[in-house]
Amino acid sequence: MPALLNRHVNGKKALDYGCGPGRSTRFLKNLGFDTVGVDISKEMLSKAAQQDESGEYLHIRSGQLPFKNNSFDLVFSSFVFLEVATFNGIAEILREIKRVLNPDGSMVLVTGPIDGVQAIGCRSRTTFLKTTRLLIAETP
Ligand SMILES: C[S@@+](CC[C@H](N)C(=O)[O-])C[C@H]1O[C@@H](n2cnc3c(N)ncnc32)[C@H](O)[C@@H]1O
Image (cartoon, rainbow, N blue to C red):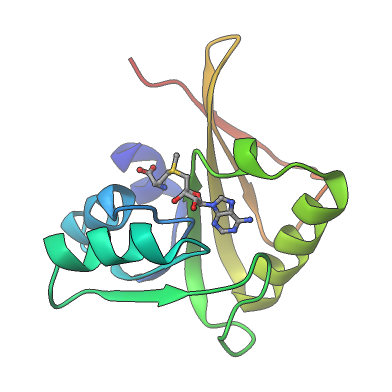
């Protein structure tokens, strides 16, 4: 994953969508990204803040991001979309992610071990849900 991010992400402003207790946020911060974590669970956010007192963790409603257009170079989301129950819910989140990504930004979704494919990323220039370019990475 570090090599994938290094190769394809330009810039250091990152959003961790569905940060949970902050494991993925700290992962991005350790790679040098200036990262904000957001989640729908206050309980998870409180755990994240306990482990990273200087970190920025914000409570959101699903698919509603309190950021201006083009705010981020990277939107990272690991093991979150599996928990979104409806197609409309997923589409709403993706539209909002596209809004806050800068035009040259990247989105990386870490899904899970589906046929060995564990991470899928797509450039924000492409239309979400109809991507023309997918970056696939397999982690051990
Ligand atoms: C399995 S945890 C993953 C946490 C972290 N990204 C990681 O990789 O360790 C999934 C997180 O997604 C959050 N989540 C679920 N549905 C969400 C939604 N619609 N919008 C934002 N966060 C959501 C949950 O509250 C939970 O904290």
